[in-house]
Image 1 (cartoon, rainbow, N blue to C red):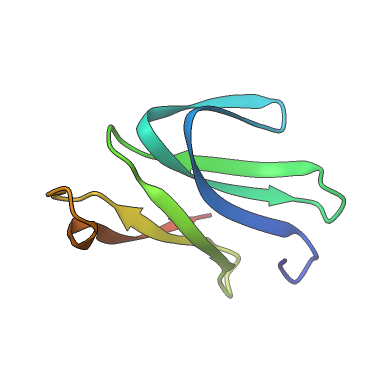
Image 2: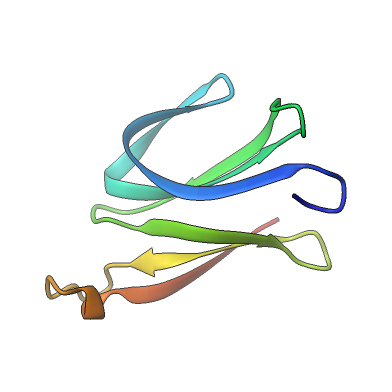
Length: 93
């Protein structure tokens, strides 16, 4: 929750996902999403990020200036092992 009692959610999805009334399709594999809801569950805002491989969203926080930060993993130069995943930090205004 942020200082205005809005719910912030980060994660990842594959295929299609419905955020509010908007359907989003992944660019391939899993894509990251950031979602903001009212404290009663009404959709306010969403963003997605991804490429042809599996990106994963694991954490979300609001910065002092209001920017949303999402932390996760990106396949980078994936060699097929968990150790080959790169750390990812996204910033959304």
